[in-house]
Structure formats: structure tokens, C-alpha cells
Length: 152
Image (tube, rainbow, N blue to C red; front, side, top):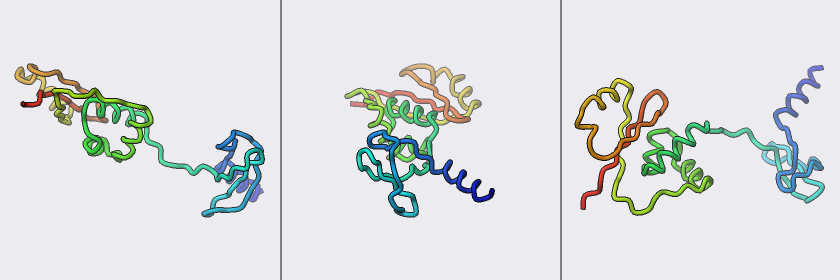
């Protein structure tokens, strides 16, 4: 009974449905590589191993990173704000084919504020004039992005 439970749990952990190359469900075991079972597809001859369970970043952070990228922040700035690797952000920009507008006369400045600081910021009339301001939620805080014209 215990052995059957172990085999069932192992099959759930290392579940394989289809060959990643051709999509066939006809495959056989073909050795072990790096302590992981290796398989060979009978249809196309492709060798593959089980997919490892990797770390997945929530879609909220992917969307937020791409929004910040479009607003003009650099990869490293987004990394510092969200705590996600700049390489991951670059990969998302490539994957989703996100393009920034070319040759803008404005550059973004940003501040991270809590709700009280944001209310205080908007209560000052001097902060309401000039370039546009975007406020976006960032976890339990808010990011305020303001565009300023480059000085010639």
C-alpha cells in the first residue's frame, strides 16, 4: 500500500503528457540524466526529461514591469522598485514585443509614496501644475510618475 502511494505521488510530481518536440504521447524511458528520468519519443526520436517545477512570477508583476518600462524607466530602476531581476524584465519585453516611443523630449521622475504621503502631495497646489502625472498601485504603496522636459 505504501509503495503504491509512493509511486502514485512520484508520477504526479513527474507527470509527462506529450513530447515537447512533436506532441506525441508515444515515448519510452531512456536512462537518467542529472538524477532526472530521461525519455525518448518513439515518433520523432527526441530525448527529453520531465519539466522541473520552476519559480513563476505573478502576472501582476509582469504587467507592472511592462507598464513601468513603457513609462520610460530603465530595467535597473524597475528591478530596484519591484525586486525582480532586470534580465527577467528584458526577457518579458522581448517576449511580448513591447516597444517604447522614440525620441521623446520628456524624461520620467518617480516617487514611491504611501497613501498619506500621496494625499499630502496632491494637497499642494504647486504639484498640480506642469507636466502630467501618473499614479499606479505598487503593492501597499503608490508610484507617482511625473514627466519633465529635457533642458536644452
